[in-house]
Length: 287
Image 1 (cartoon, rainbow, N blue to C red):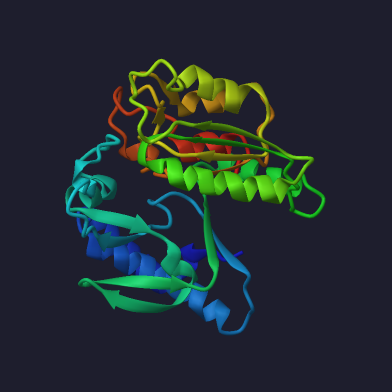
Image 2 (image 1 turned 45 degrees about the vertical axis):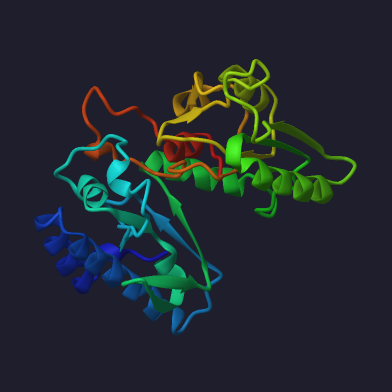
């Protein structure tokens, strides 16, 4: 475990970042100083992966200019306050990434840089209690390895092809003893079609019976998932409050901003919906 707080370069970069929260470059300088610690450790110690502990205020994501012609970051409103670093990054069209913490190589691309990670990079958010819950869930298995026997797959619209590919892989991987439940609407099915699945169907699949793996594809905000009917939604708070044992249920998603962690202090009082998906899963010990 590495304590970044005592590093002089990190401390100096943090002073600049805190003084200029609306400057993505200052946040990148702080991130680069922290990455420097990882690089110095890697030079003399073999690492298998990197786990960051804390939200964007503690260990910042790297900021990268958003080149997308549509659906830019400035159009996403979690919502967060304008003044802190979270609001500035969105308003100025920067996307957040952490792969650089595990990358020894970066390439130039479209006026920005693209890290080529050779180490997996994870993050424990957001409170100390939530991070401890995740660690305890990991340690609750004999070897840190979960052997799944069931899976849930959800998607609609243009995500159909990807969901079917995931289903084929999971059916093959789980074998005859495994069970794969799928809520995959055809791409040509209109949301108004009575056959389109609803948030109630998603609750039944995700929160009624334990699924060891869950692939959730669809339209997401930081704290809610829109169902295939385009009318009903599942909130992250429902996952956090579910009585079902969800420890070590592995969730992966093709939903935009599913993993966006709203820094609690950056939320708009009485408006920002908490918890976000990252926090909700962390509270349940779900990687």
